[in-house]
Length: 381
Ligand SMILES: *Cc1c(COP(=O)(O)O)cnc(C)c1O
Image (cartoon, rainbow, N blue to C red; front, side, top):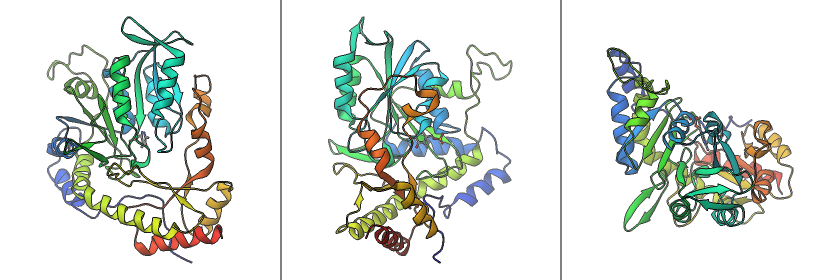
């Protein structure tokens, strides 16, 4: 029996223990300390953003960004149907309503369909976009860069400008993904008005749990909201409702060490992706590709298995000690979201039934990749 090959697990062989030990020895383990500032600075520098604010999770980051964008309970936010639910739940935290969009072949939001939705179902009134079906103002779009790919941000940024929509990039899966524009690397998360990253255990770098917000404008108010909206450190006055969302120094120590290794992780993931691609080349099995005009971070690999029973495949691979999983259930099909509007969700439904994710950890070896490809091949012979 082959050793167990997990889907996506952390890789903590750099300076993690050193920085965490230092934080503990100095007894700075809570929401203050130098590692938080260093992690924020280094991440902002890496993605080319003027500032960054560390928080407890990607979900918390998205919640703060929606508050900062002024999204209220009277508003609607356009979201993808095919994504992890954490991209959508914060819309409900602020009481707003989601409107679900379809994906295109990148698995990210289909911008042409978004335009079609605007053209056929919305109207501009006093500088704001209104949904003619619900009569609500559409205030923002949350776009998700699925599995490390990049959504069509050129189109989305133009749509945002034209219809006065705040563009929020859920870049939780795409830290390190970039394209080159005017000779400059433009990173996922820095193209819209706000970008959010996650450092959950399965992401490309981890802090155990954690997140980071980057943005075009200053993020001081977001930081203020994340630390209980404290106006006076001594007398504890508060002019707003705040949140306890700040990252801890221990987590940031792990994050800083992880960030030092990010490009190495991406290189390994790229090599493993290329190897899978080569091994599946002359088979019926289709490895989902990334856009070819970007440098993806190669976070997750997906196979498209048409006309197959995916749950059988997953079970058979599990019997061979290989962990895989189907893509997410569509958010618009989940109980808390069934009542909200969807617009021509078709492709997302097809992909939902035909995709599985295969092992992709940054400590996966070439031998592991060959074993997985061989077993998948055996199932589909
Ligand atoms: C992981 C993930 C999140 C949430 O991140 P957490 O840090 O776990 O809260 C949000 N959106 C997407 C698309 C994700 O994959």
